Image 1 (tube, rainbow, N blue to C red):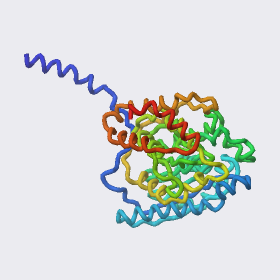
Image 2: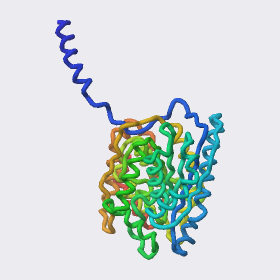
Image 3: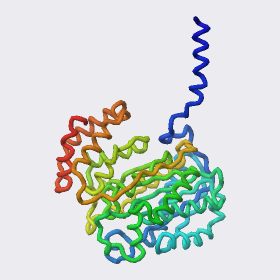
Image 4: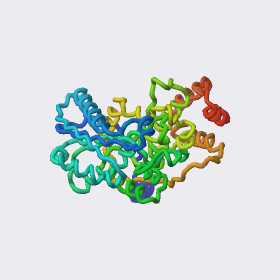
Length: 387
């Protein structure tokens, strides 16, 4: 009988060996921090040509220097904390125009620092708004042309990036001239979108750690766009910026943070961030969400930690889900249905029950004042039992 059992077990061995390994959904903290000696911090600004929009969203020129300095500061803080001596070179890239034009212009500027890039153990690029799309294509070009050392660690901090375009309800007169191109990113099949996706695939295959940070009350870019919600890859990490001077922590900010946490663990949010993007939109004439995001040093610190303190995850293809613009006639039941789907995820039910209880308590205490957010609470009342 024992021989028969052994024979049966042996017959099963090839079956187990031929099974594919479980999919890699996310990175882990590395057992020890990376040791680096030379680092390069690159800043790429956004672009808003209209005087009105510049007044509201902030002047783009000059911010490249700020991004480079902030990224370098984050590297320095990380190095001091981990007892690492590192030499840091700062590169600020400035130049206006459409995405393709800016890529060419900034590439020529970058050539002046190419020796520093080629010798760096760590390359960190920080970009904002339209600069995110420009920066990803610049980084892809650096990689394809062999300008980055094979074993160099590379990180990209994308702040309020127009990855899926601006809010669909914005009048086209707000963004004029070259900035009109930003609406092309609302169309996945457009040439600018396709070039961006191809460049993103290149840098992810090269193990670049990408941090997408969106502002919870951005007045120009929906959270779905700034966090590139329809793209999935283990090297992509998502975060939301909440300005504590304007917003007290409440149910909605914790809910968005919870959804980001799930995405970072390789779990679907069932479109919840998409459904919340429009209700969270800031005021175009009074809000500062789009520009305030790059003033917080914690954004850059997170980008450095994501780049230098995580494990490898090679051989995973980037997944891109279909994207369509929302409409003014969105079904009001989409939001509670998304919330229900997210809460029904096995990972949530088995491991995050305590956080769900905290969300329920916050939901009970949440007292929204605006008509839009009152409607959000009303639509979520039906899933109270799921919380």
